[in-house]
Image (cartoon, rainbow, N blue to C red; front, side):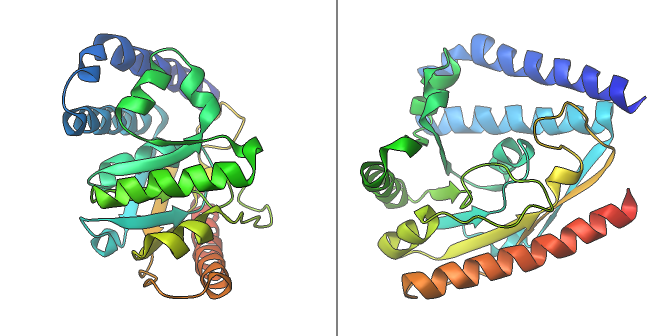
Length: 240
């Protein structure tokens, strides 16, 4: 039954995405903020279908810690779920994502329309400079810059592998950083089509104020995210 429900959800999810990209192509010509609102509607609809078809719900903890204005949001990356589920939780998100996604027709065009932040990870220091420049522009617009510090999805039990991007942004943007942890990998495993019924929890932690040196920030960010993630994974497993 789980396999059938998972397969059905995956079909509906990608059809829903295709309909947004094609039928919603008019949002490419509207003001950017209108287009962001349309994107958030799509994300909510995907969460709706995930709950109705696959039985996967979600719970948000600590949402009151997210400011309306500019900040850096950095968190755990276990599945594809958080890349869209976080969108409705923020007022004006600017997601850091891999540049290869911009090459996809329609999808890539909207990435530029939304003014997300594509990064060519193979470009080294040049990519880091471009990341900082784009993030500074987003913060100047009062947006929330979202980055997954590990850069790629990791299974719930994988050891952490934090890259320097989040710390570099923190040092340059002079805004608070809101860490988040989650247990999405238990219910939406990476590189698998299975969607396990249950409740994904995403937890926003206390803001890290600007002003720490890079090493202190990196240590605090990783410690707080990993500690909370372990708690959430254990909690999620107890309910499977």
